[in-house]
Amino acid sequence: MTVTVRSFAKINLGLRIGDFRPDEFHELLTVYQTIALHDVIRVSVEPGGGIEIRCPDSRVPTDETNTCYLIAQKTMQALGAKGRVVIEIEKHLPVQGGLGGASTNAVATLLGLERALKKTMPAAERLRIAAEVGSDLPLFLVGGTVLGVGRGEQVYPLPDLPAMACVVVTPDVGVSTPKAFAAWDRLCGTGALTQSKLTASHPSDRMNELGRGLSAWLSKRSSGAPFVRGRAENPLLALVRAGIENDFEQVVFPEYPELSEGKRALVRAGAKYASLSGSGSALYGLFASRAAAARAAARLRKQGWTAQATATLTRRSYWKRMVAD
Image (cartoon, rainbow, N blue to C red; front, top):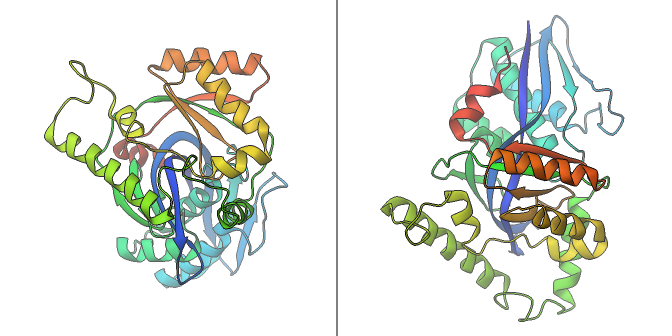
């Protein structure tokens, strides 16, 4: 039996980098948002043993370094299952693009294996296994709008928000997340991040500032108070107005000027908000309507950018659309 799973991408609605943790990871605070762009994962279990990964994209590893391989091992062990696992990856998301491609592929593999084997593990066990494989994986076991803390692996569902049109620009460069963190550490270590560039002088202060902004946003959501005087506003836009920004832009944009230009191009095309996703290289813009997003994507493509109009996914839509017929 082959199970086909849509492997949806994510964007980061802001990302703050905090102090080093005892495990040598950075403390992070971010809001993840799933979107409709996706890869397709096909999972089957055959007689025999071992794990085989098939993908025509040469940039995707097909050995034990692939996150799909790692999570398949752990899932088979947790389910007490035997057999030869075959994973086919139909790649549409960029590699090293900041959209969580490898992580969402792994979670799709886990869910596909459960369905193929007709076995299900407890939700807490799923999250434990996902966090062991990578920091970005657990968010894809929640979907919709998700708060990420710790090293990003501690995830909490936020109020489900209406879908919003967006455009994703994927420049033809790959950004290494470890290298981006190293650049951030060098920048912080040199004292180059001054009070004029940051909203607070210490990483923990800046994390707290974003936390206060999120708390204020959640308070307005729960109270039903309008975000803009006299008229309603998409709650996603209200969220990004809470002071959300992506710290990685400060080190990635100087290294890759074309990414900074891509963000400006999105704003010129009408984006209400634009940002780098994760450590990049993908950029996204939020738009007032699907028609506006479609026009912007067409305009950006004429300018030479690789741009796709899409939309954010609510939690309900994320789970409803995941398993392909």
